[in-house]
Image (cartoon, rainbow, N blue to C red; front, side, top):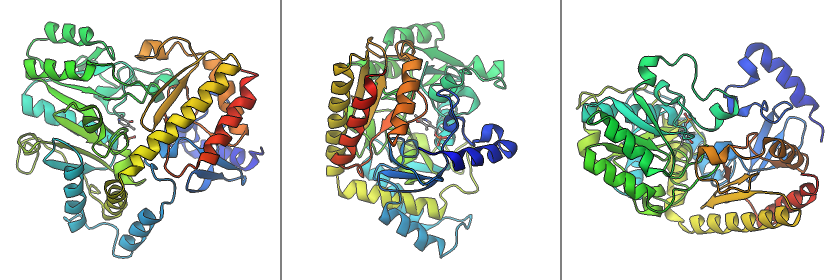
Length: 428
Ligand SMILES: *Cc1c(COP(=O)(O)O)cnc(C)c1O
């Protein structure tokens, strides 16, 4: 494939944008080469500035669960834009999407909209601290909750890929309030709670991890966290920015049957526009300004275009719940095909999957936490990534990312993907 135009665009971008990208995960630093500049997208496909076509498994890192330029979403945004793009006042559509989200997601009464997953998680933790009047938080190594200071401690994919899991610029004062546990290891949580009696406001986690590859919780892990929280007056925060409206209409709470106290959203809920949200029962949410003492705000929060996109997306997911079954089936099909192709070429690997999230790790070990995810062979991944790219398959340029399956993928696309794996696996 020819990447000439992308390479020129990258040269220009680097002169005025640090590293040429507005989010580090878009860089190809971990895999070598330069990023590909996308011109347009439709359904399951991306088209780059050189005219190459790709089957897309990033899908804007999650939002495009129904495919790119999905007509109901695009139409909703165009219609709204004609009526003005922002007023800084309440609008009816904010209540409509809130009502729908509250209906779809178990165990929440109220929801507040923000502009990104980062903002949602940052605000959720502030709310938890205000509500419990305690300062420390527990997070898990390899989980990502956006780039706000408290979370840049062993922070998952982007940070791992770029070798700065603990970012400079985060003060020691902030870092000392973030305690680090091991994913799928209840004992590590128990010890932290014991050593910090009555000081922990909340435990935040990805209830299915997606930022160190895809790592589902082992049996009893979420249930165990739930009871540790109940016993110790700690709020449990599920960061469902990736899993919300993806693993089930009601996210992980519905799919795995464990409830959290505060849930954060992003990605799918915005239909591809910048949206995040956090939600809880009324007694917690009413702690927020203007009726409660915890301050949180946003000039463009609940923006009409963003709400229109999100509402169109959620409406479709709510009304057509077979989408979730169909996504599961497609992902299982892809999983089986790829596993078979790698196995018959003797490539050591582990594939994790739940619902429409999947990741391939080039290691024989079971991948259950950050340490085991880190045993993957990064050189093999590099070759795999570039091999797939040359076959027109667009994967995330990092071994620590989840593949996002979209309903727009046809079985022919999946077969083409499996065929690509077959043809490059010999040389891995
Ligand atoms: C993407 C992501 C975030 C951050 O969301 P942004 O919109 O990128 O700020 C937070 N948590 C999880 C689990 C995510 O996957």
